[in-house]
Length: 385
Image 1: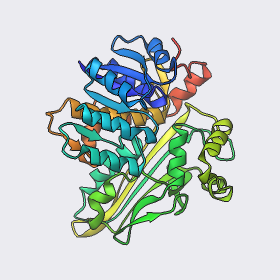
Image 2: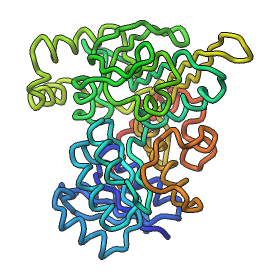
Image 3: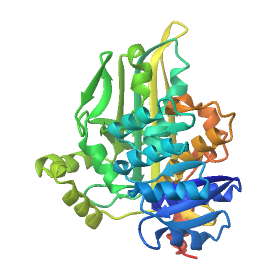
């Protein structure tokens, strides 16, 4: 049984630890610096393959000691993006496999540098976006003889928006602010370009529902580098309900809160509720030449909250966790040929969807499960025994 250290017992770390420990192939060490955070998850689920630790990953010596004393094989960082470089350094020094969820471009480059010449796998940007969206887009790309455009669109949205932002905090507030505030990689007229966040506003209609999409940072992952010379246009945008972008421009640009992110975080967390009743939209569109004709192919999916281990988990928890767990499972259960830096697009779409963890991306879900559980008062108990 492989020993997996999961850092961070938050929304995503909790489900990662539950999924992996329930597989009976992994013993999970769930660690968090907050007193009682990891133990609450472990006590709620009562799995012998899941152990809680109070550990501050920013203390490099403490992290190294834990890794060495417990025979850790791989580390999954569910920490904020700014914590990941030091975790990756420990992974390289101790010859561990490394996986993270970061959307931050600079952090990913630092991890890539650390991975140079490594005998283990370093796989940053796992999860949904970046992550699964790159895998889905790459599958479409391979169907074309020549490429013209690649458009990636992802949104984690409340099913029932009723505030001025038409949004709920479904994942890391730090991550959302980082995406909305940093420059965005894209390819424009065949050249790599940095474009402004919260710009490039466009309208999208999926299954009769109208959305908007706009530039955000990090979601493109390494796909632009992989195909940069072969495509005229490539970009990533976040999907929201109409009107959200205008409100965020006011907060971040008009009120200058992009330069006071601690205040912005406090405002959002005090004003915007969390929810388990969300929906994740995954949309990839590729145009180019097939058999001498100009064509378009799309991958479109909506993922809803699902029951796992007897509890309801939100769509963003499900999709992010399914992404990183399937990638880790493929690497660790494979033939040990994946080493060094591994881009998300090196994994095949069918390889992910057929994996025991990737199956949660299957089409055909609905909001019925979450609606019924909420109506019966049986939701929101992810950390209750």
